[in-house]
Image (cartoon, rainbow, N blue to C red):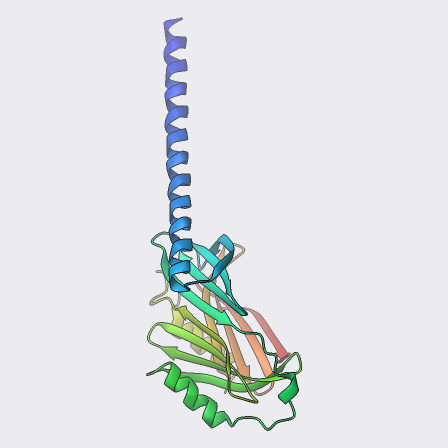
Length: 239
């Protein structure tokens, strides 16, 4: 009888400890999510939060906060562990249908605007595209450990989209590394420009996802991060 009581007390103690651990973990998660939302509101004063979402990015938990201020939409991504901002983006609707018959602003002028906006950056790619019938210049730049994406209205040179993303300074141990993965992708598509590079998990397998641009074509190369093998390759005409 005494042994049964001891077992019951042990089980109750274990259950209580587990409950406290779970409660503490949930409380910490909620606290960091709240911190991220507050940081986003401070980053974009006067904006209204439309959505807060927990997600996984490159194998770590993140908090994505969506906001709106007048007609401008924002998306901010924070690392959940320390609520550090790792991605920032805003976009405006392109409503320039009435000036589509005008001559495009020159590419050189757009590049000058981009370099002035992101001082000290290197332009990785720049192209003219048509999105929903509207002409736009899309540029990819790199500065330090940040990659930028800028979208300009081709008719009046107005900036429609601004985005920067924190790049991983190094790949996790046991993987081929960013430099080698980039070379593999460029060997697959000679003469192309890399527009996006990410380390991610796909069905539990660590991969490098590389997007490239060459002429009117867009490419996506998925590389096994451990072996360097190309496991997916896609080519399509740019929209």
